[in-house]
Length: 287
Ligand code: DO4
Ligand code: MG
View 1: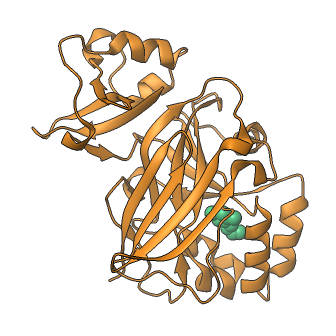
View 2 (view 1 turned 90 degrees about the vertical axis):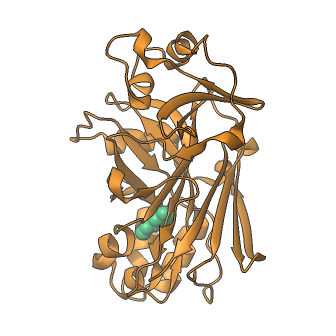
């Protein structure tokens, strides 16, 4: 089951169940204490609750009649890094000074985890993601995202774009927060696939497409099976000595890195597709 936050034609923001044929709006007034998407995600049985909340008075709505919003409320957004071989190699190449750190963290028991964004830095579907004005080498990072409840249980999955300034990170690893965290630095959406049983990782493709002036200028893909760490392992490390009363999103790292000569430009369009979830499309802005 997939859930989304959408804006209707009348401007109202609603939570909806996403089906192939359209959207079913949820009536949040039916259960006290349930008002937001994250209230459903953090409930003991999100699937059962969402089914119960389907508004019987509202008929299905066509997907094209609404605007999908970032599926976030008050959660923090964190990210794991160097979890795919491709990212380890790219990072070792871009950072003369820090190469051995990337090498070590790929195999160390403790993963690299960093804070990526707060809700106001997140762009939803169709909203711009930003390249910093002081970066000359920036890329999107297409990532499988864990949706975590306050008990750090994986309750769902979504698509993330961990926008990254490779030149700033490559100059000095201590600049990582500036390379990664800034206005519009993170794309999330278009919906949340609720977790239900084990994932077939080999069958989950993560595809990145970049268009410039309507022409495809980069295409790359990987599979979730290439992720070196287990998903619950990443969630467990994030929750060590760290409380998330509003829940959290955890991007799980990139396995697709465009070639070194590639940098994003103002007006490019980034599309990230993940099997079973959908496609997150964002234009790029660089002022
Ligand atoms: O080490 C820096 C960040 C790595 C990262 O964001 C990734 O591998 O996805
Ligand atoms: Mg990343």
